[in-house]
Image (cartoon, rainbow over all chains, first blue to last red; front, side, top):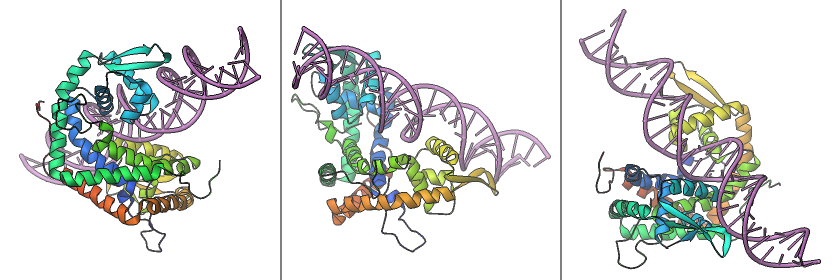
Length: 165
Length: 165
DNA sequence: AGAATTTATCTAACATGTAAAATATCGCAA
DNA sequence: TTGCGATATTTTACATGTTAGATAAATTCT
């Protein structure tokens, strides 16, 4: 859903919403991801699989719910992706002895190899993005994004008029 | 794909990538969209359908490729969404007499009614987002996002090392 | 001890993202 | 006039986003 200007009598009643906030965020993200995607494809990996593998690098083992949070993926998506990664022998899964509802997910040796091969390219791309945009500006943008997220996640949900259940 | 710090010998070899640029953009967008989604659901509409209908408000008729650009949706997605919207009687489709390959898409009367009902809620939500974050800061954020997109869309694609076809 | 509630994860179903390919139409050169 | 390349859109196939619900295990209460 996009933002709108105040209703006006002009023919263009709502600003061109490709410049709304959600759209701007989407376009910016696509402009960034477009550069990473080819490298991922060369290694037969999707963006979401990469996010999972990257998250698993940070610790020797993670629970599924932790992975969902770290990767910002929905639960059902993580379940399916883990199923595929397990089939590709890129991760291992074991049950938590203390709580059998939980699984502990870890990188397999093959998964670690793949990460080793992809990481240098990922870093190189990010370095070039930083160079083009400017490290100072990037830090400012990150701070603003963090603040936007924080401001909107605190306090009550915003509802439109005519709320009904 | 996420950003990375320079390789380090520390145990945390790559920064927690939930704070990478792509992830930050994704989280920020979700923080915004989370407030819009309930209102859309109350009208039985998905976010993408709303984007298409909103785009159609700006002109009496649009081509499919124009719609894809205005809504930042991929061609196959637009095709499917238009099929569904047509089935819901929210849009009309006619062939361009000058070029029969092209379709001209327009809002139907029902579509216009729906937009009239949803728009006030959308605007109210956006106004509250603006109030919470600050209009000045929002403008700055928009400008930075636009610049990021511009910087990354000009010049050559960035490729990682070991490029091979 | 047993029942009820809560929690963690997975599955189902459908919409959309994405890459590749197919189909129809148009424009241009020979 | 015909053939070829380009263009616009749709379709196919598969991955993921999303909501809702199912299953299994743990915790809490009676």
